[in-house]
Length: 181
Ligand SMILES: Cc1cc2nc3c(=O)[nH]c(=O)nc-3n(C[C@H](O)[C@H](O)[C@H](O)COP(=O)(O)O)c2cc1C
Image 1: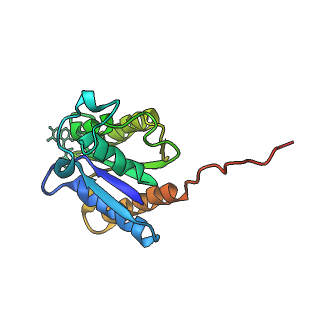
Image 2 (image 1 turned 30 degrees about the horizontal axis):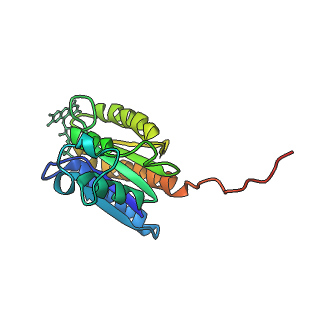
């Protein structure tokens, strides 16, 4: 199962729409795609006292369990002041440093203009690394205009194809490698 983590609380969210298009690709490839809508499911600030030993049923325990069940993730964020959303950062702050170990992570950011979103994706790459995940080379930096039918949407879809293709082609190393030489 691939877990989409949505970091926008907007009603008509561009980020959500692009994330769902990514999810359709996972499902068309025979995989399962779940979405965590952080604004609905995990809106509270991270409780630092829960970090080391999260009480059962706490937001930290529930979010960690959700991430632990995933074979990979797609982090999707709006661009706010040149960066990714606090909603998404707050969620990632609940996780431990090995939370994404051995798993691929796709990155999607939606900005108001065509340039801001790439920066947010690059910033997320460093967070994915801190959580021991493997960010795919392709990210999708987008804007509402990319949802215009025709060439803009076709181009967005091709980028989503690349992102999900890389995500699903990720394989962990076999446990025992042949001895070389
Ligand atoms: C507080 C705030 C700050 C924003 N800062 C930026 C920005 O720095 N660069 C940018 O390209 N867009 C910026 N935007 C525009 C949003 O990224 C854009 O509306 C995007 O579609 C939001 O995604 P959503 O529709 O999924 O919520 C900002 C919007 C808000 C509300």
